[in-house]
Length: 296
Image (cartoon, rainbow, N blue to C red; front, side, top):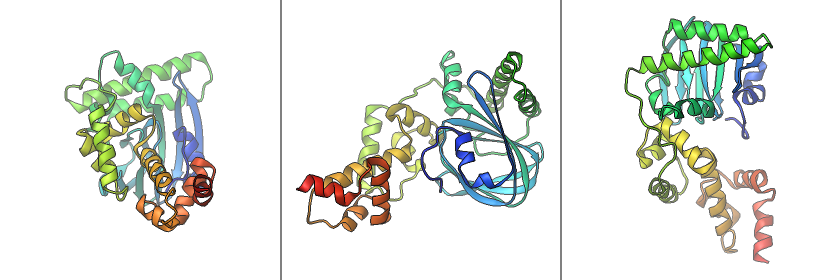
């Protein structure tokens, strides 16, 4: 599992298990857009939730692979040279790849895509749902991504404009592939939906929660939920649940009759040690010291 929060896909890649593979990083365009070329062996790694939509283009591969976006393992089909895949923003995904593959990954800030779509009152997340999690071929998108990669090596203004233009070409072609009307942007969850989520989290005692469950409670798709949830709360669903666990733990720690182990399990932490690590990371203090401060 990825540790800590990452502000970008590039930051995650440089500080994850992927760093052991040969990597080449570039950045270009006004957003900016990040490019990573990675030559990877077989692996089973988890990609952290990051604020970018990531396009994956296979430069050299012939393998089956699976992914788990929080609702169980699914087969994405066979990834061969020239195939494409897309990962949504703000979604933690585990990948299982069976053999060597050479990938070009292009990470585009989701906020930048939303700003572009806002001009037309469209919802990026919902419109792209048909292509998320699938392997597909598209000569227009493949050619655009390769040209973007080539221009990313050039520091001049013309290359930056070229990357911006090709980025819009990629997005337009994706919308054409979905072959369905784009839906109006909601961007934020309603107060009623958020209250229902809080109630559900409390009823489930924070245990075994998945994006699929929470999206169903909110009445939206999984990928739309991740985006709209962050715009509503300022954090990802996973981080929100952690914060709710901390709030509940702080409340229970005021009762000296409850042991630290009891508090940890009541709040969905896997162990007392897990609760201690989270408290140190988020509050800069251990649960025991926190209790001593409020009880004394």
